[in-house]
Length: 288
Image (cartoon, rainbow, N blue to C red; front, side):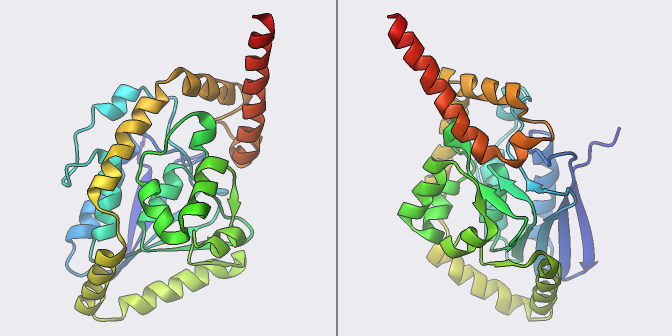
């Protein structure tokens, strides 16, 4: 059986595309980490590459959340990456620091890890009609772990970042643009043409000028590793807490991890989940 989930297409020596293709939902898990990490290593080390675009082959999903059905040991047993960070934050940090420019072309849901990958890219462009970005984790009793708390406030400010994280709701493409979550939202029919034209334009420029300019922008804008590292440890600890286990279990009962309304309207269902838990707690108080 073919377990490949991340596909690299080299349009030219200067311009590559990375396509996420793990049907039906583009769920990200421990088996995806080595595949994506290998491609990011190639992005880092290639001498000719100038620009890489990340997109999805799955209708409705750019990349969604982490795989909560996988054993947590499958994740914790993976060795740290070259930066010394744990594998997921490591490869996202390396992508941001690579000399090549990275662009996320977002059509569909970029949820949890999908949002973290988009945030690690240098630029993000979204389908106005079809893109949804979100960090649902707090609503499930979890702390996000791939560095978004270090990245997102630098893009949209503290208040709006807290709204995204603590509201745990879906952010459509047009609102994501207004908040600074993405560079632009474009009509869906124009997204591919725009991203392709921008990628080819950048690929036509001098590599050294590109990489040196990006390096100075990195110095001014990227978070240091010490801000990112603790997020992963706290994320894993939060997943094992009873509150998270209960909420994840309730989500799974409703259809989480399966094609359907829970995955396509996760923000809505997270909100409903909170009221269910509050009702259960109120019943316990009344019985006491």
